[in-house]
Image 1 (cartoon, protein in one colour):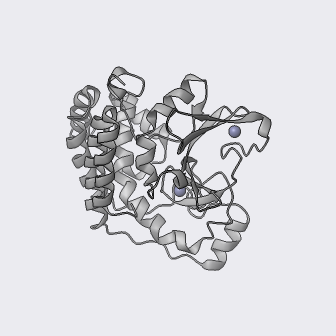
Image 2 (cartoon, protein in one colour; image 1 turned 90 degrees about the vertical axis):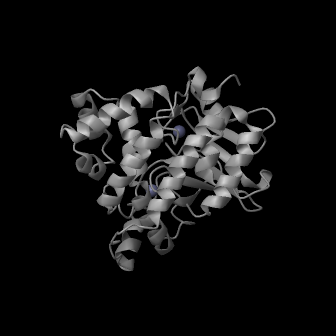
Image 3 (cartoon, protein in one colour; image 1 turned 30 degrees about the vertical axis):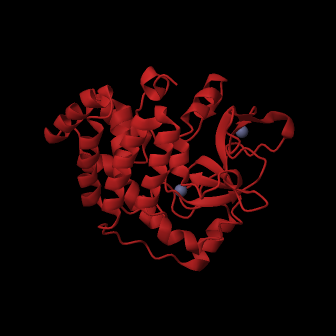
Length: 300
Ligand SMILES: [Zn+2]
Ligand SMILES: [Zn+2]
């Protein structure tokens, strides 16, 4: 959330004109982003002081600074956001329309502990277990939980990233939280490659040609996939781990991309990669949107 919300909204409007089949999902995305941005300015978080020596020795050993459990959360803000996102989600898809009132009911009756869920946002096993215990959809529950804690997490990433040398980390996992990347970007004239963390939004440098999920550098088992008329977008496929990651070439875009949004407007590339048998290692920003269903892409 480095760029201003107005700039991102302008870009979204442009995308909605150019790619009308993404109109509905972008409407939902805009509303969520607006609520998260509003919350970001009101957060009360004490970011742990970092000892530079400790940071260096940890990073030299290849250990991420905080790990996924290490982010401090403003739980009050996260709870308010949870209800705001629930209200938005209810009119987004028929599945969310059915599931969200049931989730709210389970929270109000005490069967689901909202504070506990938010505190353990990183523990997919716990969230699944709680969802199954109450008979609610785990995808929708997880989508709401992740969206609610995101402002706290991003705020800390913003404060911590300057204490790291993001050019020299060169690992496939985030230097702050250790999460896998959700998307990659080629930047600068020479096309240096950067990864975007799927949890905290940190960006760090990575090899130009290598799979971030298994570190494979063998050209023979690394391939690309392009969509027609979209030379700025490619999908990097790895035959060794069967993982894929989309890479945005900023040099061919003509604007400075907001990567999280670029991830949404390239879902068609995820679909192609998945249909070819590759899998996405990082969570998706479109949550419980019916990815492969007719609703996802309209008649496109
Ligand atoms: Zn991270
Ligand atoms: Zn791989």
